[in-house]
Amino acid sequence: PLHPITVNPTPHRVTVSAGGRTIVDTTRALRLKESVYPAVIYVPREDTDMSALEPSPKQSYCPYKGEASYFSIRTDDGSLTDAVWTYENPHDAVPEIAGRLAFYRNRVQITEH
Image (spheres, rainbow, N blue to C red):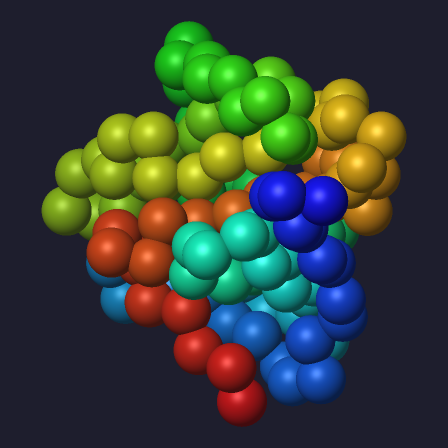
C-alpha cells in the first residue's frame, strides 16, 4: 500500500523508434504507474520488430516487480546498449507485464498517437 502500482491499457496507438527505424507499432500497450515515478509503457513482443533487439547479459532486480533482463537495440549508427527491459516472470502484483518490453525514454522516441 505504501508503494502503489497500477497497470492500465493505453487508449492510444504507441510507436517506438530508434535510429530512424520503427521498432514498435501497437494498439495494445500498457501503462504502468509506480508510486511517484513517471509512467512506463510496456508493449507486447508480438508488435515489436524483435530483429532490432539483441539480448544483453545485464540483469537487475526490483523488489516490487522482480528480476529484469535487458536488450540492446541495433541501429545503423551502432548499438543502444541495455535500452530495453523486460520482466519474464514478474511478481504477482504485476502479472500483466510478463514478457512485455519497456524502453528507456531517453534512448528512443516513444510516441502516443
